[in-house]
Length: 73
Image 1 (cartoon, helix red, strand yellow):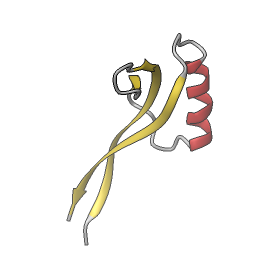
Image 2 (cartoon, helix red, strand yellow; image 1 turned 180 degrees about the vertical axis):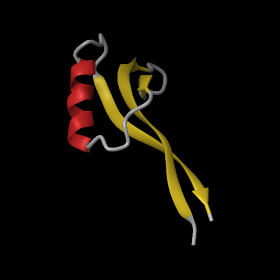
Image 3 (cartoon, one colour; image 1 turned 90 degrees about the vertical axis):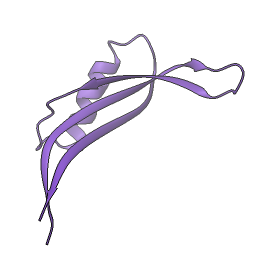
Image 4 (tube, helix red, strand yellow; image 1 turned 120 degrees about the vertical axis):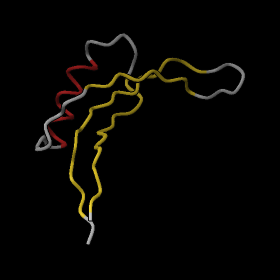
């Protein structure tokens, strides 16, 4: 049976950088924060993200936690 071993976790802020006038799609800018502890809860990450967003000049478009794992047998 295969196992998943968490290697690292990242908090990613996706910021709204305006709208493309030709396609009318939202342009985004990404800021990533590495070495997120694996036992950080969603509530804790959300609180940290809100603090970080308050320091940004662009508004928040999306917020992601990105986990990278190794799969082994």
